[in-house]
Length: 133
Image 1 (cartoon, rainbow, N blue to C red):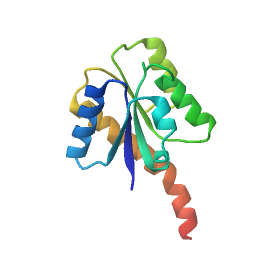
Image 2: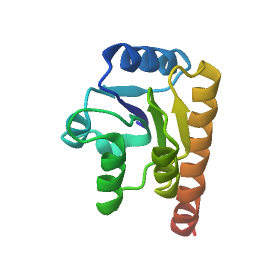
Image 3: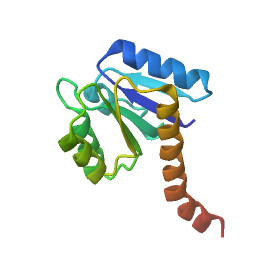
């Protein structure tokens, strides 16, 4: 099962995001911190990560970096209540799909989800073609 993982320390944002995505037919899992996500055995099924930047402990940009250092490539959509050009630029340099300022619209998030899944599919497709030949 392919899952969109939502990592945000704000329970209301986390819950609303998961509820929205579930209502649209996506399978979601929610985590209250980067550490909780890193400790999960379900990371392997994550096909897209909706990730808050400002969290206590390991922040979103640090989590993105740790995943990359581990060779884990999962499309990341950053969300933040404190948008800053410096963090936005850093997120995109590291490969983020989107950077959304809270509050964002359902349509903005959905558009980013579709972009992230398309990016993932494009990255997976060559491997799948090689195996089927």
